[in-house]
Length: 50
Image 1: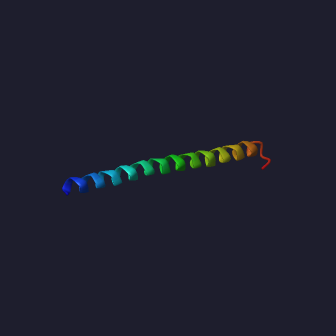
Image 2 (image 1 turned 135 degrees about the vertical axis):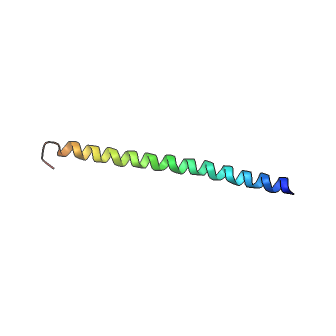
Image 3 (image 1 turned 135 degrees about the horizontal axis):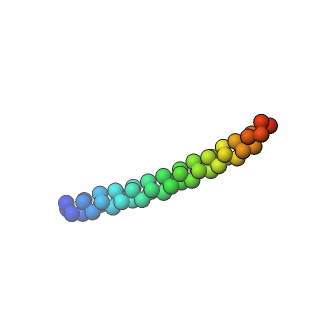
């Protein structure tokens, strides 16, 4: 019984870690896109005409 419980907990932990990696990767992509927008806007305003 202890072995089954340990395997179940290990399985849940593994699934949690894998889903967390996908979430962090998605957040990183969103932050990168936001940074690109800021860079584009800064480039547009570099000549003083915003």
